[in-house]
Image (cartoon, rainbow, N blue to C red; front, side):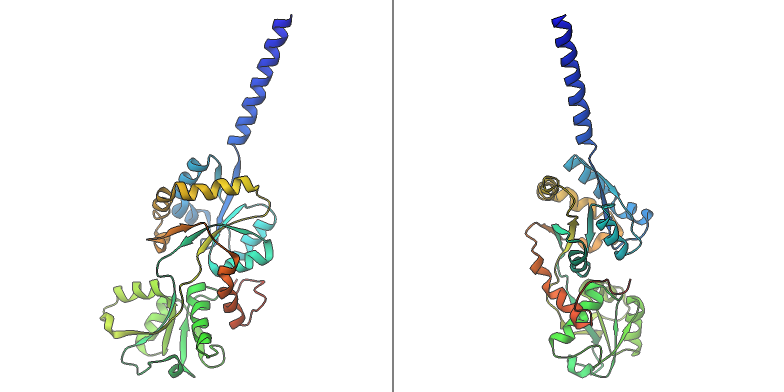
Length: 293
């Protein structure tokens, strides 16, 4: 009888242990990406990244599509999503509305904004552009809208009142610059280089008359409801499996902006104060909502 009872207890303990291990292995976390809309695009760009992250952490990350940045904030606040990959302009709003914290930074080389003119236009300084039409990119974009606006502000020019700002698609803005419909084109350096490379005009036909500082990193955020041990595990994996995760990230066509990137773990909230200045420059000093949503 004693032997039977001991065997029964042992089997019960084994069963409890197995259930516990299964529960631990089944820990699931939702990951959203604010730049992409719809599951199809999210899967195409991040499926391989998710696979590598799952294997390295032992967790089950599920991709969670969001229609816009505001929806991502609501999902994080309601705990329907746990991690969000987003840009610098979005970070400051997420921080204010959700108290999310950075897990890891996605450092992009040559990530800065530029103001471009035609080389034969006669415009050689930002001061020359006062009263002129200037094309900017998508409203709310860190590098194509806020960054170029801040470049003017840093030089004592109010882009909202001293210029005639136009917010248009970057490809449309590029053609408008070449036709002379706008005097200048505010964009991110990588987009400028891409457009110039594909253009039939020689590189010398364009001139950068101002550039901003390197912008803060894109960042993987985590909601305050996620256990710190999980956060530490994920952060450590980005260090120990860096090469694999970057290679997986670069499978996606839209993720080619991360070519040459490095994961940065020493991310501070103060790194994004320059972005907060950008919001004040365009008339949103509280940075409590997304511009353009």
